[in-house]
Image (cartoon, rainbow, N blue to C red; front, side, top):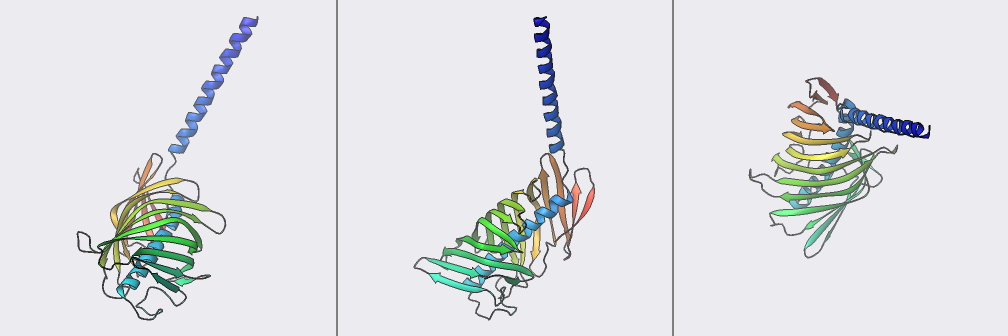
Amino acid sequence: MKTRVLKLNVVMILLSVISLMSCNTDDESIVTSEQISAEDVSSAEEVDKVVEEVNNIIEQAYVEEEGGLNSSRGTNSSFFPDCLTKTVVTTDNSKMVTLDFGDGCMVRGLFIAGILTMSYDKDPDIQTKTISTAFEDFRVDYKLIQGSYSIVRVRQNDNGNPQSTATVDINVTWDNGDYASREGVRVREWIEGFGTGVWSDNVYLITGYWNAVLKNGNELSATITTPLRRELVCRFFVSGVVDLQKNDRTASLDFGEGDCDNQAILTLADGTEIIITLS
């Protein structure tokens, strides 16, 4: 009798283990088969807008400082409104530029607050400069930005254009406690408008890749396969394609053929197309 009970217990244990393994396998299958959704893309695009604006602020502040733009703020000549307080500290070898937006003001339709500090080599003749940044209670579009953001800027790339390569490792926190992160590389070639002294005619082509944890908890990777075109007079990318991956699922996001609008097309691996309204 004891032998039968022992055998029965062993069989039950084996069945339980097999059942548990089966459940785990099913759970993993559910996770890896989850399709990229419009919610994923919208969550990623919110962070994308933040990253792009940080890049805009750094680039435009650098150009205005090093380009000797002396016209008053609030005119078309400057990217920044009067609410910005800029402080410059120069040493023998370096320059530190502090951009203080105080409790917040509107910059081209986006709420910016807090302090962003840039530091770089003072020598104006250097072909390549590294711009290091620091954030202090810095917010873009009411979102708190923390982490590291550095730019390697060349005066002329192989096409003869200014180019910046940003290494991004930031956390983004919403006022309600939602959280997202972004890590990657963003290359920005300035193809139109450099040297004119105004920002409104600036056009950039952007390439790169990144990994993100979205505020909905999903992880998403992205690679720009067709350069994104950013015209500073438009809030949105006007063209370009980004390939996306979540677990074993892929999709592509197409920003169009050049029109300034708030729509992009998400195409799933099976050919299904979803219209995304950009924020």
